Length: 272
Image (cartoon, rainbow, N blue to C red; front, side, top):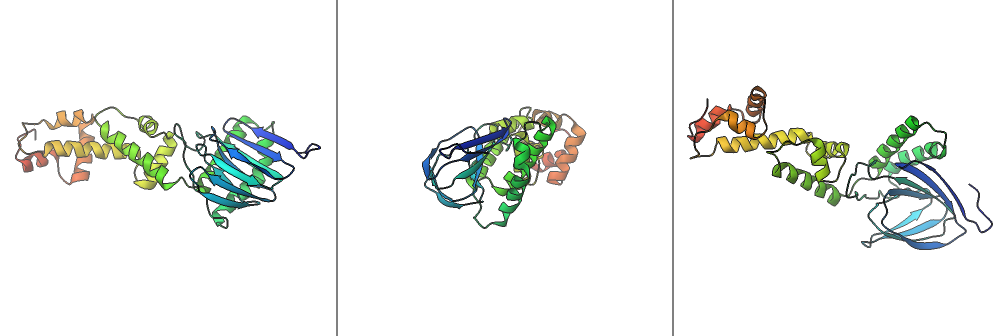
């Protein structure tokens, strides 16, 4: 990249999912980076920057420190850097499908930043290369996204909110035909993002969690005192268990008894 007579220069390359932008400026700059479609990781080649998020949180950023600008957040900045690089990443590449994630910043000296620094040094030229084959670019994008997500954790409030929404959706719609895509859409995550969230937080897949919720609903119905005669097969099918043999095995694994034993304990006559 070369700068003009006033010290300004610009170079860019990439695709809709991931692009890199190199900017040269003559000296001190200030302004506001408003909410935008993409998440942005930036780093300075020289100088320093002061950054203030719209919630008042502030950072002092030195040269070489990657910082994440969450897409939905506005940032006021002041900088004396003359060379800045910005890596734009689409929300879908980072696992969002609707509402954008909020990311936390590691401390300046956190060793977790080094893998990202090393990858960016290695990959920047390839991102800028217009001749990079589409398949290679897609693979590189995924690799960079993986390292970015391991460097900048989603905020606890953001993760907790999405988890609550996913769990609430499963409980509210457990009697319906549901797919991973349905649950993911309900909490504004990609299917992969939802799978990762359930694995980290609950240690199960979304579909395993849905099955356990449905088993709990069947167990409540079969164990309800004073209810009329129940057919286990009808209750199971109402909660979307179409293979009764597998249902019985899942039920025994979760509750340590057969469905007819639950009915017997409740004093309710039903199918044996």
